[in-house]
Amino acid sequence: MEQRSSLLHKFALWLFSDPDANEFDTFAEVDQASLRQQVEEAKDAWLAARSYFDSLTDPELIDYAIYSLEAAERKYMYLLKKYKSQCSS
Image 1 (spheres, rainbow, N blue to C red):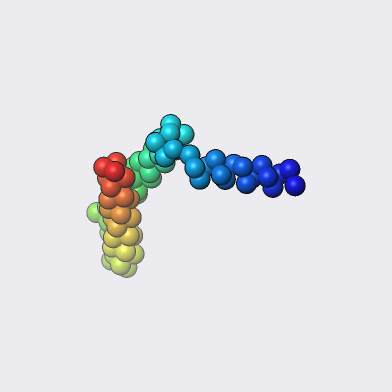
Image 2 (image 1 turned 60 degrees about the vertical axis):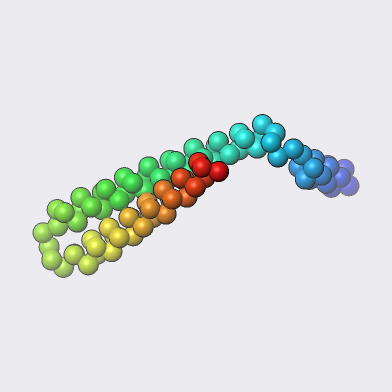
């Protein structure tokens, strides 16, 4: 019973807390840093896929290279757009 009331107490504190409190700002900064890291990793993957496509010599691998390049580019663009919208809000 003690744990249940403690959980309810924590939930009530969260529910009625000030959204401008520093606790939420810290969470947003960590989330933003994590998203920025994902954007950088996606960009590296996109550049690697581009390099692979440019260096291809076997025509049987062209479809795979195109698919990989397009998928990496779309992932990068999605994460970049998400990061920019998060930074502006």
